[in-house]
Image 1 (cartoon, rainbow, N blue to C red):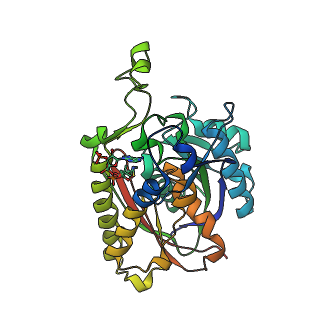
Image 2: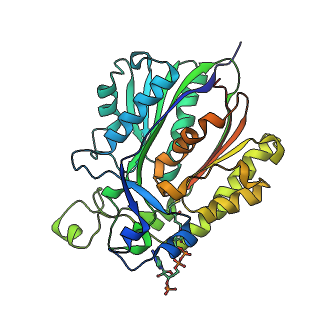
Length: 329
Ligand code: COA
């Protein structure tokens, strides 16, 4: 019996127009362009300024572009999976809002929460649906309006994050596509990177607002250490499981959290920098959107049959890697 393969048939993105530069951040917090660029690799990030637009806007635009790129009508989509930590509401799922707006009439839709690893978790969840034969076409989106939860008085976090959305259409194919994946989680480290209030532990109150508990908090040093180890370890794990050498890999598609983390991962994999997708300088860390934004920016350079390793680390803690063959002509 032939097994369905889950292939990427289309890629789309949405980036807000407003560019928040390092120079502008100097006006809000005690920081400077040299520190930000040398410690993170970031020069600027995009911000969704329009107060009427939320994560669903970024997701919707990215999804529509991915559908067009794939030549797929929204009505053909079986499922919409949206990875995000900045949903429009705690509930209903933002994916359901997007499903309605794009006209994916027969699809069921749900959000997936795995922070910066969210897109990879969503991609492989959609891939499994296709491989099982239960779905033929799945829309996988990673979108975050991080500016909604970033504290612009905290210099240790506000320089890092930006807003953006990316999406892919997964389709059943005969060969290639998602070949393998490895995911890991370690929930006892949740407070290393989290949003303290707004959930059922600390529901919204005047106290949570006064104490700025609705903003993201991060133990930057600890996350940096764990991310550097985790992303490199899981990338090597997927290479070893699939007998891949550095020569076999056309591109590393890393989550864009910090240029130093990306460099360390590529070094451990033995990959030349020319084979690493890096766009952190322009967008910062867009959480669930970084990996599809890379695929979008590099899509003209990707060749049929290219071996890609996608790798991410994020809050949870969560981390993972995907080995896929690019089958888009
Ligand atoms: N501008 C200027 N100085 C800053 C600063 C800023 N924006 N942020 C922190 N500093 C200062 C610190 O206060 C510290 O000063 P001190 O030595 O006087 O105490 C100094 O710079 C060094 O701070 P440190 O935290 O050691 O810097 P770092 O090199 O670890 O870089 C991060 C900080 C946040 C960039 C880095 O830890 C990081 O990238 N962490 C992972 C973040 C991440 O990936 N998060 C998403 C999940 S994947």
